[in-house]
Length: 166
Picture 1 (tube, rainbow, N blue to C red):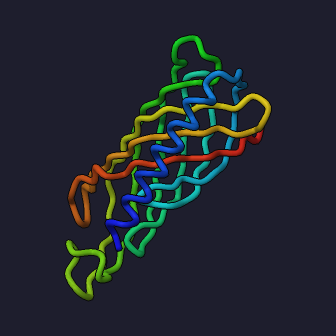
Picture 2: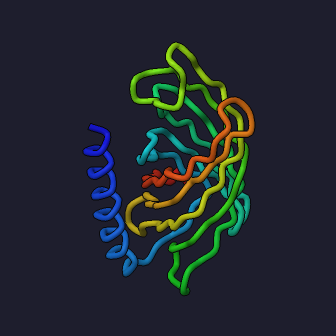
């Protein structure tokens, strides 16, 4: 069943990427605050606030492995090819969470749980639609837990849809 959901997730990301590419011809506008959802290996909510044209913070609360984790990222944004609203971004920050055992978590001993704390990085693309207050993003979010169950997590690809508040 996990393979089926991974195939569906990959197809969704490819479809959204092509739709995202078509939107590049539309002019866009920038924002200061936005709230939305992230969908990938994890699912959750996210909030982004720009302090300047290039620097933002992003906070997210996500669910994965029958647990919950959160992260706070500082991001650098930069425009791509003079296309207003189309930016790449990269950043990093702390993350932490809790996972409990279930049959899907082969790396956690039966009856055990794990509190984790680590560092999460992010790299992605985002586009702001002009006539609709939405920002669409696709990113990769690798992480490493420094405490708890220490292991790098490299499989976190996500699509986000954010509603611009201003």
